[in-house]
Length: 213
Image 1 (tube, rainbow, N blue to C red):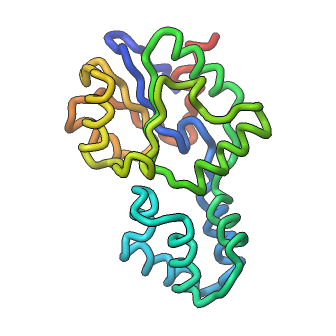
Image 2: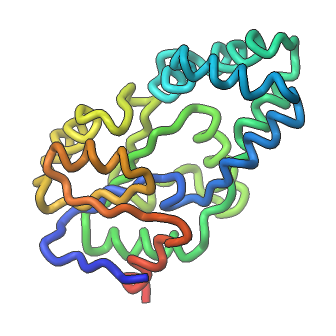
């Protein structure tokens, strides 16, 4: 897998899930199915149509409202913690090498994190960082962290990229955006950003590991 060169690049914007932190999406699906059986697929489809997940990712609904929406469609009472645990099951580890790459990148480039995420996932990640790394957050590894539920904007919409560009006075043509979702890259391209599609099994180490060597 080829390394990517950063000639002409001053700034790097990193996605979080599947770029910095490992995810296992099936773990959440399997956890919900083990809890709720056949009702799961139909209920998740209905929630998607109601933009329940998108509304949570953009901070339009609270965590309590998010969990209540799942409870309502699945016709269950209680089990809040089991629902939360299932929702977070997809979140795995941050490879040690990624910390080294991010720190090395910071030394030579302006670096940012831009993630479609939500309060439950970020709380889980920050607890993981505190437990494993004695860190409160990711501020030591990025100039600025942008989370969709905090800024109420979401990839792939152009406005989220324009927001980051404007806030930091970035030159789009000299800014690289790395994401694992092709659709997100299309939004970035529309505002002039350089892009790289990180596709499994490719890892951040494969393309930028040389920065930390």
